[in-house]
Image 1 (cartoon, rainbow, N blue to C red):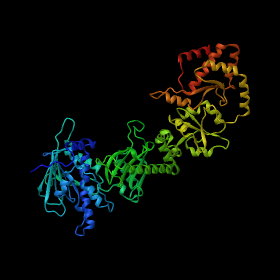
Image 2: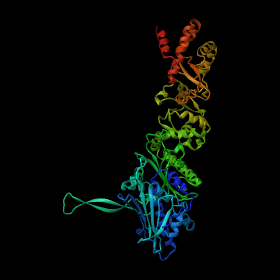
Image 3: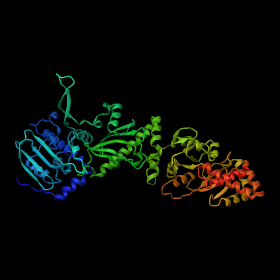
Length: 626
């Protein structure tokens, strides 16, 4: 029997396809099952126009069987089958697809569509098999044909016997090597798991023989082994069902079955989109973040299906980074796939879906915020930090889309509040949205810098995430109200009579402040009388865009940029300490140096900044005590 050569490029082309295009060997089963599904679809289409042909779904299926002794995996379908010419054209010419040609002639009807379009998927079988035998009998033909190949050297075609219409593919599985275990593709449990992973929602039954133990009737405690044919796939995906058919429990079970998380979903979205792009989707907002969510190891993405066939386990392009916590899947008939089914040919369709999904997620979060605040608070505690990163990243490109979703702890409400809620409560004379940054709420409440703002009765937002201050620097303002740190040089608060008097007295003490500024040269840019302090003797404030809290965060980065805040030491002229400073200026400059250094170190401690020389600081304390 003459061996024919493949009509595509060469042995090298086939080697490239089976070794490079597909990243996982298990993909071969998905490809072969999809081809079988296409073959059954073709009978369905034929029945639509051929009155002599009836399509009874019960007669159409795909079956897998294993012969471990012969190392053979067999896949059988009851589809339309192939003639000798089909075998020659579709399997003899690499990258020529019968499904693609059929699709061009028959537009999808009744929700059906042809999955395989490029014809290369069949050759993925050679990733796991050193010989592939295809026996097929076409609909309306009496004679069957056998196509056989051991790879790139070529193939043979000869007449064969086959009782039923359809196709049988026998894979002679390769022997194990040091690097690859091919035995797994002869294990029923492994094949079942691959079917469940990739082809669970193929619309025809995928059957496998299962050996079950049945008790013997005449022998107690003894069993017979019987072979029972079972369906592996579930066929009808939950996302193709009407929402009215599904319960909350159904969605929770789907969430668990797909291993989206060990928690229960906080909320779900069931989307049926018909428009510029057609897709179905079920999305979940988890209750708790995965353990690696805020690490580099975390992979975002949604499962991507084309007509029920899993194409990508995690399609990152479907989610923006700031919504990377969302879990779920997308199934679309609008997607055209390239030869590997793992890369999209028309990414425009994917971008349309991604844009639509982003809008749906934002709407869902806004609804939660408005209608179920307890759930939204829980969500924000888990994932709010990611939204803040979204505001800060990409030079603030997404800030307008996310600003209404942000929340911060309020000094007056003692809970998380939105920016809109804060602004709605602002007194008419209040110019800025005030915030204070620190390690915790308790720590911020004790900051001396908050005294003046709190005395005016103004609400303060507490920033305890390292990203908070960076995010609002990008936002700049909200509803035309600028953000202002309580540690900023100018708080924009009208001075009262006491403040004006203190300012006048401070002008008389210019010599003292100049002396202290010179003493702390290189540590602070200025020493001045404080307008914000009420009970505390001293604090640090900052001039410029970089705050002290931002300096602390930047200093902890691996590639420390050594960015410093422009620090100012503020002294409370109404505190008893100030009288000691004035006396020391007149009577004992050495003592003034000691007091200045002590006050500076106290201000550092209040801010949570490290003291430059702890030993020297303790020595100074001892001098004061003596």
